[in-house]
Length: 374
Image (tube, rainbow, N blue to C red; front, top):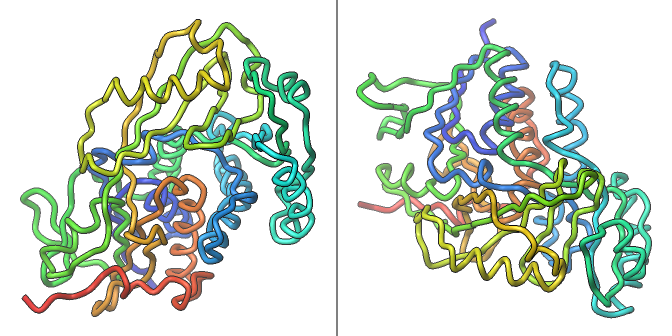
């Protein structure tokens, strides 16, 4: 019996993960990825979601499971012959806290959280001096929670490897913009519209554009994100922990002296993908308050991408209303690097087994996608 034909529009972290696992399982999969503005390819991020103060339980479920899933994803890619140490590395995380109460809360919470997230490993409080020993550029008077299981991921490297693995397993990658027709077919360029058994829309902030021709309104807005990196003279930065200071900046050490600083959260720029040096300078100044010696180096690399958010910052996931074979995932925001692979894998599981761990009650897609009468 022939397996179903699958189409995925959007080759970011969700779409590429789903495509990889379905092609690996023997499905006929076509991945349409035009690529412009893709959040994942522009992103480098921290995988350490467990000690967030955000209280949304469905969101926490996704990011916690997503952090755990990275270990399986790396094993699966390694088994397929791919090098993964440059993609994801568990090098520990320093969560800088401004008071003892927050530090104690982290320690108290760790025991309970480890029951569902064993990747957390050891959690302990470090003095400013101990933190500096792990990250020599760090200068602060605050103590930090050190999470041994925290890590970093390079979004561009992950996407590149997933697509290589996908095509190795027989998947078809089409680097063209695709669109849906009123008959729920997929068309790209001047080709004849094609029919597929199941379709996943994983186009991030561009989801409204895909569904507008079918008379849907979609509660998704774009958010511009920019980051930069510096090249330091240190040699062992690949073993330094990532730093999560208060405020919206992350400090992410990569191998061979590179330090990534990110990222901006720009809600009023639409789909603009131009580098804004003023915004990068603001990031630079924020980072300088934690790693003052950053002033010894100049920016040597920049990235910009567009994240997708819903109006209440919750995730959009599920079957598109009034369709039988179209699903959508969007609205992951800045946590997309953490939860995206897990969501892609879960959709692949749904296709294969008819079941996934995503609760329709927790993620009511009708709240965000509605059919209009016009």
